[in-house]
Image (spheres, rainbow, N blue to C red):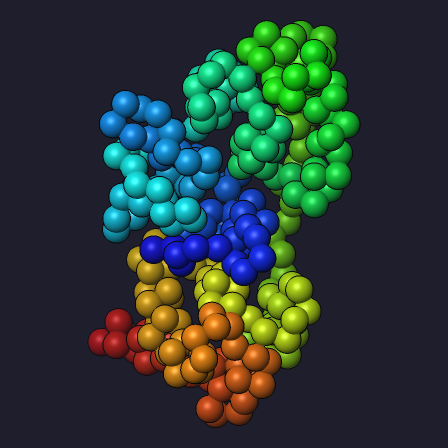
Length: 261
């Protein structure tokens, strides 16, 4: 379902926005799961919506390709803090790293990832009492200055942000391109185009539609990404009649008409 690998230069777009790598909806909007092996040990550090994880066509994480045997629901830190700790503890050694905590919290709460990244060092100094670089079970549960106490006092009160407004690809393609060209590079990756179209057409809650859109973009992509770089330029995307935008819109219209017959 999801694109293989990550964006060039780092984390995938889904990870940057704390979204599910399959449907591009906010991770915190639905129950999430992790991947485990035959001994119930986590296979990687990634989270997906539980429904999306169970619908994967192969037993491999779509972000890192790690093989897995089953999925495991990420417990609520509010309702099952000990289960949450055990699930986030990838190595199973009774301690959590800063990266593990960061990924789990942005998975369950509607946090602005860039702002949270700016304050987590300060928070970590408060939670990591002995300066070991990790939070132990005891430090996690400390009622005065523990991670759990701060989550209960602060993060459980964070309101959901309104959904982002996406420009209309049919009537304002330049703004649409700019909206999803987050690095202002003049290019869009296949992942960025798929993410943009899923959000444009509101497909994220329908996995069959998500799969259809990924297949549609993949089918026409090779025509425009001739050099195989994984990205198309603004000109290739916006070119009247012969551009990728028109090709996708026409293909989607054809697909919709066929489904109505």
